Image (cartoon, rainbow, N blue to C red; front, top):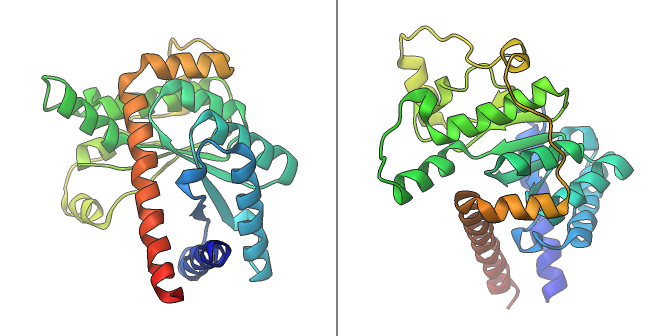
Length: 256
């Protein structure tokens, strides 16, 4: 039964992706089960299977982003998928500068740093409960990553995600991509504020950031030193896993 359920879940993921691709002109992300977040080989195998399923449905791999957790194993899986198989990845659950550097060094197509979840952690765990637009910890994190990528010539796309308010969005105006909820899009459409780019390659090149190299030891140490990133990565994996189990249980009920 387990193999049946796994196959059914993969089919559902791809069917959802196919429906979205009928609407959007670009790419769609399909996520590998978060319970594989520490299984490099498992993530690679699942990514290849999903891409094969899209191919069988007539969709090129160039329209698919395989979404992986930004664990060290996930980043290593991304490196192999991109370089060996030409499979594009979207690195999710990214909260830390060194995570981002490792993703870029691995050749990841796109990263999705979670602005709002970083903000949530600081509101919950520090005395400061409100932030000015450019002092928001999530905005500052993505700004640093964007500037680093542009200054040192990385092609990895920065797509800010998980916004809590329009100030966070406006604080990242000029970022490569932003994924914005309908509610916040509506608020932006109703605003009369003149929007100017905050991020740009020119500004990035004038930043005082220095180039770093992130191997496994560096990655694990920097994550260990970053309580927010460690907490939010673990929490995100658990939450994504819970959703996968909910779907799994629905299939179990159908197959009984």
